[in-house]
Image (cartoon, rainbow, N blue to C red; front, side, top):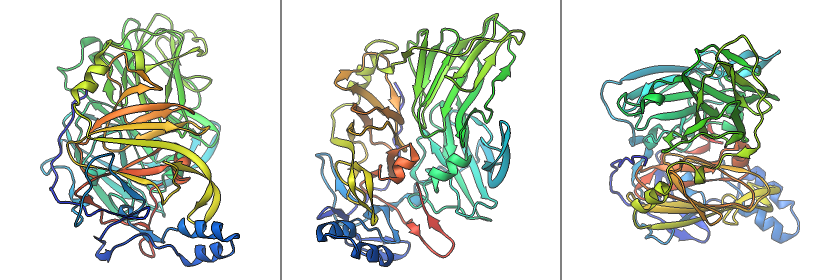
Length: 525
């Protein structure tokens, strides 16, 4: 079972009262006192709403308006999942929930810049870390205190780094307007955190993320286990990173649309760490039987060989495949897309094909997933997260928008918890689109899908693909105080309303979303 960390935070109550359908707070934001519900008029949008007929639709338009600058603490309404609410005043700021002091074990500098890079046959305008996309692979060891200095050379809109899948302290989560301000050209920001769990992760910008990730601001983070922990077969495996990303219309593996030859002697095994940096699913497989040994940075106990099978990795998700290196070359990669060719180079392996979708719900050591759920203890909060869609207005714009529990932003729930709570989420997708749901700062245990309970190894996720019509039940322990985004990682979907937060009582944010000043506009999605 995945080890869970208890992160200490000041026990200061957040004042939360219900004001209609809007979460009302009295807090100090960036040195300014704000209170009450969201304003319902912003001059340009209000003028657009004034022309809307009939009157009921005009009122709906006005209720949808967001101010040009606002605190995420004031977006939506408090949902407490059957647990107690809070009163009085805001608490510790996320900017104070940072990694520990002391000498770092590993230090890196990542410099974000505009660039041009050949992708296949064409030069493309891209955004880079350290002059390339994907950015450099950062390799550290479990338990390391790492320090990463982010520098922005010339990305005008600003940039941040979100450590996708790593349960960092809230102040290092890298979400513009929520946990920090975007880093503008000529400026820098230093992230410091201990990497608690071995596994495969990635990093990417969370400022204007729908654009900046698509343009190339991302890279892999590999956390190696302490040497005594893995079994010898896995410990001695050749280690390979395989980042899937589409630039324009060209799908690549580690930035290359063609097959990449990886010479390796027969008789060993390769650990291939797939990372899906796209907005949609990545279907990956091999030309030989393989094991799935890890999902989203958590190892799967009792992994066994699967054959004629593909792994459907959600946007933002990761899966580690253990692949034998045979006398003939082995192809490992994306169905109908780029691949690695591992082993001898004298022959060409067949193309990838697979008919069966891998199902983590029934894979691995039988019954241990259910035991892990029971070990979490009594559930304190129970939240529905119903994803739908309907016509209406979002910030004064008419359209068909994604909804959360039937509400369009800003009328969406903020899920509120206390440290130590055991939390259940029931995620239902009532739309016709696939939604890869990503929760920051936590891993959740999959308990069931459409009423079928987990029958295999514990399946811990931070990025979960929810197909149309599906319902998943997840459990987590609230052990990492902060304000944590809980959104669809098809990033245009998040922009279209599929974004909310898991908030901890006693935690606030001093940062603002929107136009902060003449240079800075924080735009997390």
